[in-house]
Amino acid sequence: MKPQTLAQGAEAIIYKIDNKIVKDRIPKNYRIPEIDNKLRKGRTKSEAKIISKLQKIIPVPRLLAMPGSERMIHMQFIDGEKLSENLENLDYKKISKLIGKNIALMHDNDIIHGDLTTSNMIYVEKEDKVYFIDFGLAFHSAKIEDKAVDLHLLQQALEAKHFTIEKECLKQILVEYEKKSKQGKLVLERIKVIESRGRYKDKY
Image (cartoon, rainbow, N blue to C red; front, top):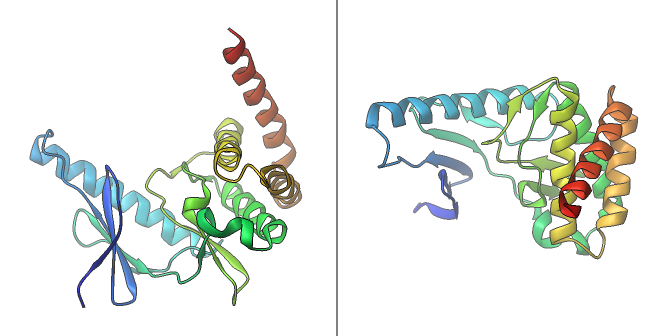
């Protein structure tokens, strides 16, 4: 079967072949080849390790194999509703609670997604689960600040993409996050500090 390109960004091409997803990191011609290969190999292995760890914690695509090449990850294809396109047409309050729970469990294992937007979330109705995808910017951190920034970026993404429902979605996400996360209260308090820094910057 011919590969179907699903997305292409600055860092990687995502395509579907048969019933799997392949993420192929693009070579950078401006880099020395040896350095480029080392960087791509390191980032690919790091992302695969994070996905492998999260498979036991929250819904994420199943790794079909640990990366053998320096640049490719082979994953399960998740057949569901991409939330960036369909959140308003679904039970967004219930889905927001699932999102909040996922983030809480992920953060309690000191994993920061780095790109928490609804473009990286897929709802599978028959399982009643929200799958998180694309961990290219993910990293390990136990810092309250990093966890708060992760959530704050999601807040900004909701405001930009889902402004008609963002307040209700954010409320459900944060309530569930505080309920499920061991550090929930501390993280939510830090979000307020981050927001106040942003308002100060806008003012001056």
